[in-house]
Length: 88
Image (tube, rainbow, N blue to C red; front, side, top):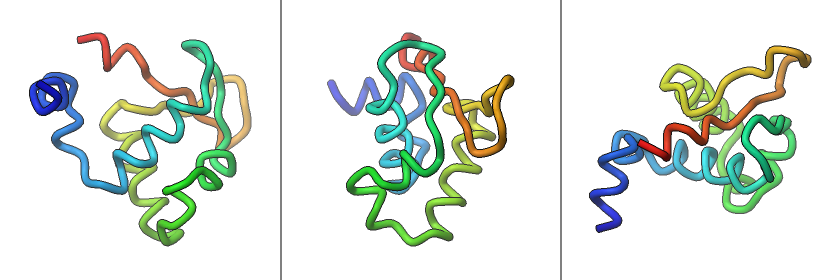
């Protein structure tokens, strides 16, 4: 059942680092539309154990795939988690 959910929302297409970064960002937000900073995500375990290069590749990939988006009214390194992707 979990594998089916992963397939349904596209998580099965993500690598381990991308999943960890997405879940950390998701955990840090309380409401849809909340902004999370890159530094906050980076400090979360197990993301804190990912190398900086891998972290940034994962972040870029999540932005391209639509799991995260840059905050429109904020400076760089501020992101909004796209929770609607989980509601498919």
